Length: 144
Image (cartoon, rainbow, N blue to C red; front, side, top):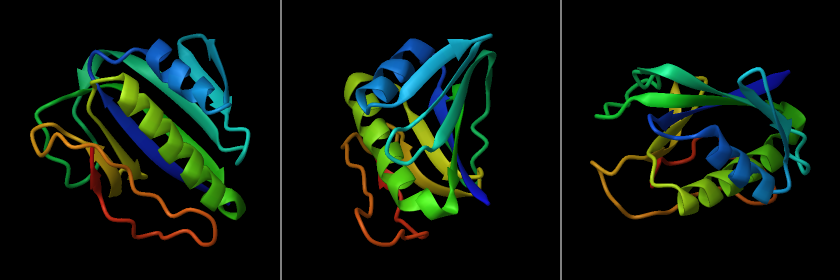
């Protein structure tokens, strides 16, 4: 069984920026037919990203922002590797946020929001994760 986390990134984001952050984590990433796919080395979490030609509303439930999504990604992790996948995803987000001004929202299947970067809320940057041991399925939202 797998768990899917969805990432929605603001219009104007480019897949090459996403690739750079992913590769900085040690992940393998490849572009083919307009899709960015790959795996994190530590968790083997599979990801796929796509840039849209037409901006879309942010789909994560309860997220009311004034920006539209231009790049969407999905992270697919086996439950047995969820703790490592969570660390990989948050490391990627920290690297991406450090090198990009774009806003984004990470959610569990577009339902529970785990991380959001929305400048209309707050401009500070932090990313919360639970290292090692168990995985907390009820992480607080971090405003990035």
